[in-house]
Length: 293
Image 1 (cartoon, rainbow, N blue to C red):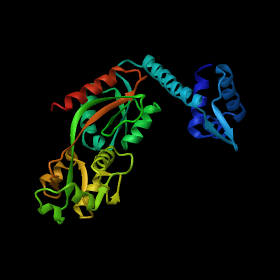
Image 2 (cartoon, one colour):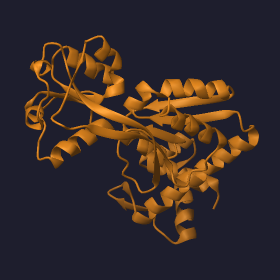
Image 3 (cartoon, helix red, strand yellow):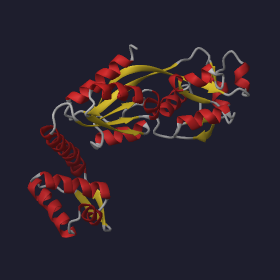
Image 4 (spheres, helix red, strand yellow):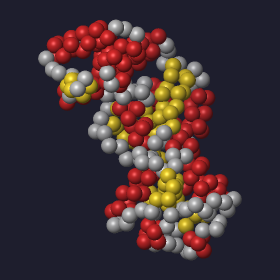
């Protein structure tokens, strides 16, 4: 057993077949099959069920995969750390849409000022995608606003946030001092896509109060959602910090809900087996100080 065995296994899982893995790794398919066989014989387990010429990972295979991903990740980190000093290298950060749009750039700017030799690679997507990439060691950590579902992820809050209801200049809600949840549930809603932390929080809250949603338009881009509300397609629930400029210029309007606040926290997430580097800790410290600014 060596690191090559683990990398081959991970590639078979990620590509869905031994043929695809062989193409990606530029090696012969029989070598892929032999490597998988060697792992299975070494541990006396079956990694895949082979049904109708398709591979289906087994329960033991999934357990082995979790270890394999992080052993390979630790190996890659070791290689990078040994070859470079502690103040150089690459930091792979994932951010959900709200965090990525509103605060990631200023956090990165301050970090790069302190660590000019560290290169940041960022991915901005919804919370579900960022969580999955952290689980697969494709990111060092994530900054997200949504709930985390995997028990293998550690989540630490670093900033408070509030979701607010917004409408455009021509919407009838603008003339009301507040609206009820009943009125909100019956109005045309513009929401983020499934997998968004903002949407999950809002949907779960409304469901807990017994209300369904009248979703008119779905989009994974905050700027597009704001423009749709300005165009009076419907109303939306969005992070207050994402619409500060539009509220100040009276392009959008904050509509109060009847004695209800949507409070939440932004969280740093990382895999429980992740090796925490000096640069990761330095970035996290910036996140914690951002709340106090």
